[in-house]
Length: 152
Image (cartoon, rainbow, N blue to C red; front, side):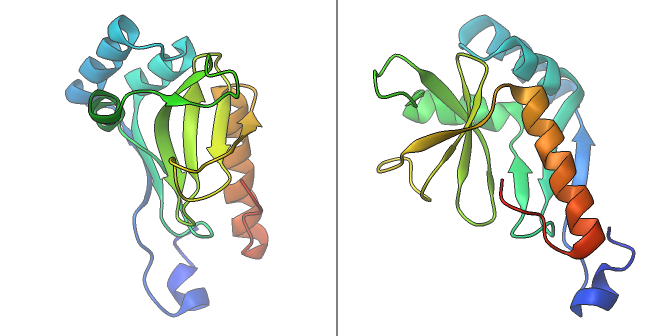
């Protein structure tokens, strides 16, 4: 993707990487397993992947490091993603357009309808983390093919 980026867009690419987990990321993943309602697949993801930063795919796609997710949880708590106030979620990332992604305690991945958690409505983006990562991959593939990542 980055090989032709500057030629296509007239400026150099930003950070576009899937960073492997380091020792701190893996320790944060273990903490998630012990003290949060993080879905098991999210913990497994963070044991291997430190973060995802695709700054130049459309507006951008970002999955935050496990440590940042824990810090946000400590500072603000889990987010209510259901109308019944029983579904709780962890903010795990965002897109460059302001939408926020959350991992629900049910394993589903949700996204906000607006750029705010205060007034946000939520919609299910994927049934689980695997499906969400597959959607991210499709966005990257589509962006490489025609410059449009679609809507995620």
